[in-house]
Length: 147
Image 1 (cartoon, one colour):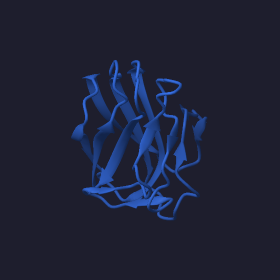
Image 2: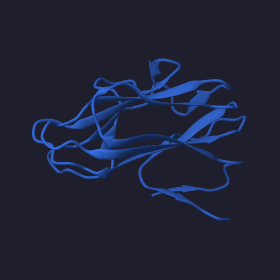
Image 3: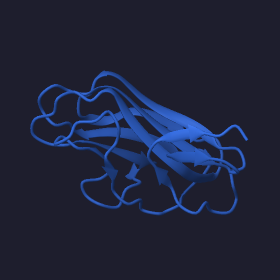
């Protein structure tokens, strides 16, 4: 569970890919209007589908370059135990990941596991406007605390 608290003002930005997931680049993009750091990433499908051959995986790019350091890049949804929620992710190229006002983040669907495609993808990126780095970027369930 990611609890976002005492961050200075966290800002949530969403990638959304409605309908069946097909592989491809630039499925959605966002522009960050301030400088700061990436604080958290959470990805989920509305329906996990029924993959038969391989994991579903996503890549997030900052100004055209993957934010993940390992290959295959990105966020992985395992096909062996299909779930609506992300199973694992590669390490980030920098953790925490700094952002500059005007950075463009884009979402690529690298692969899906054959069979019935997953649907209605949503990826939340949480940024903080802090001047000093956050400890590390968090992955997992997202919960915003009121206090």
